[in-house]
Length: 100
Ligand SMILES: [Zn+2]
Image (cartoon, rainbow, N blue to C red):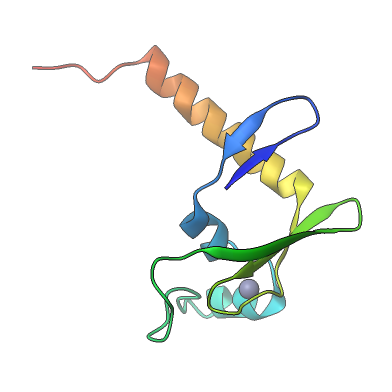
């Protein structure tokens, strides 16, 4: 899923990372108990987003193909994930793996 932010930064998010970081109360309490929020035995594979809608001006509600759709991802969080990814990518570029 690619999100383009207002400043033009386009970020390709990994669906599984997004799903595992689902901010809804159900997933949060499962993570607190160290339970897997995804996949479950009945999870359809591969993981897909079946619907997405803006939630007010601050977030994006994602509906997954297993019907889970209570997570609203604040743009602030998405942006800070994106910035972290960017830094990781820059670090990889700056320090290429050496071939022995
Ligand atoms: Zn959730």
